[in-house]
Amino acid sequence: MRALVLLGLVGFAAQLVDGSLGMAYGVTSTTLLLAIGTNPAAASATVHLAEIGTTLASGVSHWRFDNIDWKVVAKIGIPGAVGAFAGATFLSSLSTDVAAPVMSLILLTLGIYILIRFTAFGLPKGNLGKPLRKRFLGPLGLVAGFVDATGGGGWGPVGTPAILASGRLAPRKVIGSIDASEFLVAIAASVGFFVGIGSENIDFSWVAVLLLGGVIAAPIAAWLVRHIPPRILGSAVGGVIILTNVRTLLRSDWIDAPGNVQTIAYITIAVIWAGAIAISVRAYRRAKAEESVEAVEAELRARRGEEETTSAS
Image 1 (cartoon, rainbow, N blue to C red):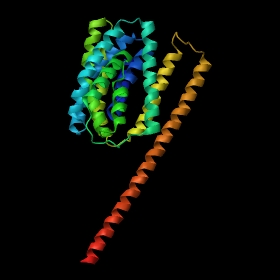
Image 2 (cartoon, one colour):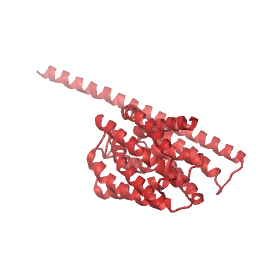
Image 3 (cartoon, one colour):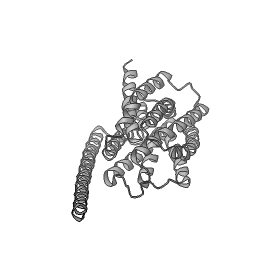
Image 4 (cartoon, one colour):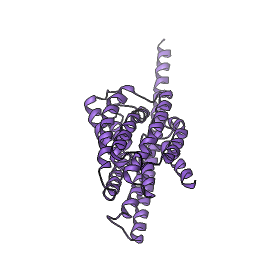
């Protein structure tokens, strides 16, 4: 019972972050399932089955808050489903000893990318409003779907930063579109796992609890995406992904690091993580201050124009 309550809270927290940032539900949930000894393929299958419900709830919530570009959903979601099915059948063919470290390495790489991307560069806006082309979204969806199934998460960490980096879509639209299209990815991956490993290794009570926590969090996350700065959230989530998967790798048979080495690694990551969040907070405040100055200057220019018009008349 205690494990189920914990899983429900994890599902809630993971969806809260995923719906606000467009990533991390699968990463967080899969990491926990691996930590308690679940088979990697079964862990990813469990998470993707739960995601069928959470992504549907998240998509509806984002739709109601007008956070979705349906053209993007179609262009990236279908290739993503193809990639997810291929990734699920590939992971199902690997042994547990090989699959767990491989999955953690994929997730760790994604976490490092997210932390650097959001902390150092923020969200580019120079191309905002320009259309996203199918030749960009198609391959992106294919790769992101494959990584998502093999890593137990990755659709958001691969897709969201890539589209944000293009600067062609408002952040809330990127997050809403990625969350909505993930519904197709979750279905395709689940079918792939059923083909590869069947259903005997999947605990459907875990699926139900993860789903329940995510569904409760979905509408809250859709509201939060309008109010929490994505740059700060990105740095925070990147650190979570790095810390949890470094922990998995250090305890794996590949490394099996001594306790003191693990402690030093965790402290180092925590210091870097705290510094990254501080940088993002400072950058966000600086940007808001510059926007305020620009708004005041624009208002002063408008008043001068009105006064000159009045004087001339």
